[in-house]
Length: 441
Image 1 (tube, helix red, strand yellow):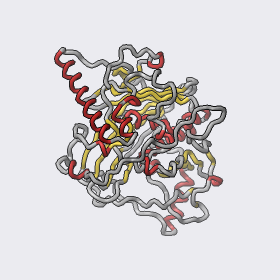
Image 2 (cartoon, rainbow, N blue to C red):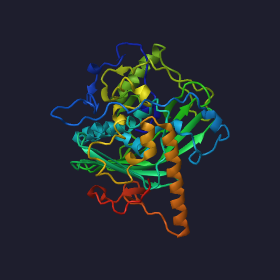
Image 3 (cartoon, rainbow, N blue to C red):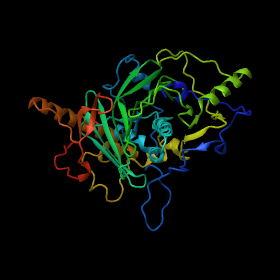
Image 4 (cartoon, rainbow, N blue to C red):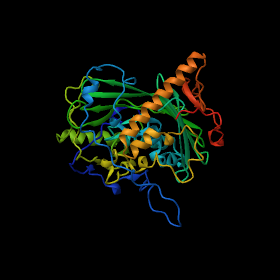
C-alpha cells in the first residue's frame, strides 16, 4: 500500500454509469461507522460542553504581504525566519500535531477487526485522515518553546496524549498517545522542514509515525506526505498534499503485494475495492474515453502553474467498494475561525478545573496564543517577543554554565520496529508531579 494513486489520486468526476456513481453510502460497505465527531453536541444533566467557536473571529491579513517577507528567501530553510504574528493561527504546533487524533475512532475500529488486511486498510484510512484537517488551513501555528508541552485527554474517545518540544534547533516535536483501555499506542516525532520556492512554501514533516495495536501485537509505521501552500505571492492560498506514503505492518510484512486498491480524496473520503474490480472499472472508463491522462509527478519547485483543483467534484464510487473513512463536515462559521474543524476549535480551551492539573509548560497557558485567540494582536505580539527573548536568555545561561538541556518526558532512543533513532516517551507525565518542570512562560 505504497502507491500515490491508491492514496491520493482520487477517481473523481460527476459522471455516472453502471460501475460508478456519486457518493452514496448505500453503495458501499461501511467501515467508518461514526456518524459525527462533533464534540460540541449538547449534553444533559449539567455536564460541561466543549466550545463550538473561538472567543474572537480570525484577524484579517489583508494589510500584510507574505511576499514582502519571503522574496529574499527563495530556496532557503524557513525555520529561522520570523514571520509577523498575523500570519499565525492561535495554536501551538504541538496542538496542531494532536489533530492526528481527530479520527481516533478508526484506530478503535482497527482494534476490533480479525483480518490483518482489513486492519491495514483502516490504518491507511487513519493515516490519510490525520492530514485532512489541514485543508484550507493557511495560518502558521506558533513555534513551540523548548520544553513546551501539550496534554490532551479525551475520555469520550478513549485516549490521552502528551507531547513535548524536545529540540529547538532543529525544531523537533514528540508525542505519545495511548488508549485508556490499553488497546493501542500511537507515537512519533516531527521535524517540520520548510522551504520557499517562489510561488509556494513546501513543508516536509520529517519523522516516523508508529501505531501499535496491542491486542493483535501489530505495529504499523509510516511517514507523512509533503504539504505545499500555493499562491504565496498572489491569488487564493490553497494547500496540496502529495508524495508516497508507505505503511508497513512489521508483524505480517504486508506492504508490497496488492491486496486492495484504496482511492478517494484526502479532503473528503476514502474507499477500498478489490484490485480486479478497480482495474475492470478503469478499463471500462478508458474504452468510453473518460479516462484522464496521467501527468508526470512534479515537485513544488517544478510546477509551472498553481491552479487550485476544482472543488465541485465528488468521488465516484465503484460498485463493490467499502467506505473506510469520511471527513466530518466543518462548522458553518469555520472560515471565520481560521478554518478550524469542530475538534480543532476545542484544543486551546481551558476546561473547568483544568488549569490546576496541567503542567506549567502546557501551551494552553501561553499568553501570546491566548491573546491571539481573544483577538488581541498587539498583546499577542508583545508576549511572543517576550517569550522568545526569555528562551534565548535561558539558552545563553545554559551555554555559559556548560549545561545541556534535558528533556522531561521523552528521550532519544531506538524505535523497536524500525531500528531507527526516535524520541520515545519515558512515562510518568500523568502522575502529575511537575515540580521540576522549567519556567518557560
